[in-house]
Amino acid sequence: MTRRLLAFLLTTASLCPLLSQAQQNEKEALAAFTTLYNQTKTKPDDATLANLRASGVNFLADFPKSGRANAVIKNMIDIAGFMSGKNDGPRRLSWFSMVQFDVVSKLHSGQQLNNDTKAALSALDVAMVQGETRERIVQLQQGGALGRNSTEAQRMLTAWRGKIDALTEMPGGLRYLKDREEGFYGFVSLISPAATEAQLKHLVNSKDRNTANWAKAESVWFAIRKEPFDLKFTELDAKGKGKEIDFKKLQGKVVYLYFWTTDAKGAAADIDKILDVYFDTSRRKFEVIGVCCDPEEKRAEALEFIKKNKTKWPQYFDGKGKDGELCKKFNVKSFPTGFIFEANGKLGPINIKGASLKNEVAKRVR
Image 1 (cartoon, rainbow, N blue to C red):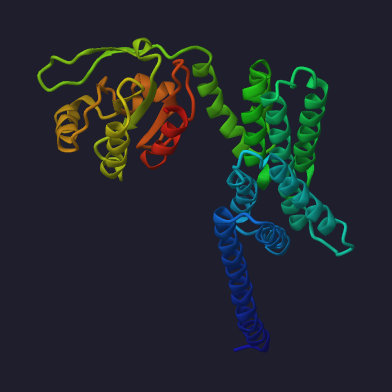
Image 2: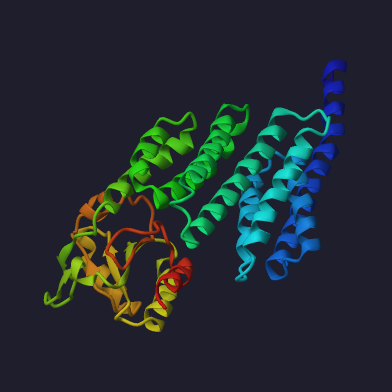
């Protein structure tokens, strides 16, 4: 063995414990953050919130390349949702402001921060601006003062947009872009539908491939959202006596359009969760429509699957499998998945699994 090779092996061996220790440190830091997050969900008192802020900011500063960085940022936004008391609006605003203060303090602490750390902290800053802007505009809206303060609302949206644009240009910033663009787009679509299409066209050309791909898919759903959904079909029935289903006649109900195949992993377990919601919710307020995306040669298998799993709702079946009309229209690539239609017949949340259905229906059906 040559001296050079021996030196290389010894150097590599000496680095392995250091790498393992770094990974262990990340794991411990994430566990500590998660513990604080769960505590804060249950009891969002000032002391726990302060500890969570420090834990989240430090995690992103110390481990900016972590695969969980985006999840930590999402948790930092979501925590405000657990301050849900009638008079908790000021507390939510304080949370967003204090996290921003901590981020700015870290960025301007005089420490030498690398580009990855700057990008991670800046992404958290954008997320907090998102939460603060949404909260302030919603409060104006609920107080009936949004019209009188439209200039102020526009100023906040412009500032939020500017933060996202700065993140786009920042080295390492693109890995955080999709979530931040989704947040901005989702809010704009609620308060300014006219600007939504222009925003999508902008995002289709994003520098970030994940953001661009998301925008292309969202463009499909945007087109569907323009008008109440129109669908007429004869439900799949073993005896060929299926009922005629007219989607427009379901307006007034929340409708869950559920795409599945007989060979989709987890479909049976998913259907069990849907059945729980189906039987616990009034038929006058909620309906499920199944979309079987099996080919014609699996018709009998599909019927047997429906019987075995005791599904009670109507089933759409065109025999064209994953190339069927509805699969293409909704850009469905994986199964099972579902789409919620609001009581006005227009498309709402997309890609909702059975496990998430209960919460989504509870928001809409009282």
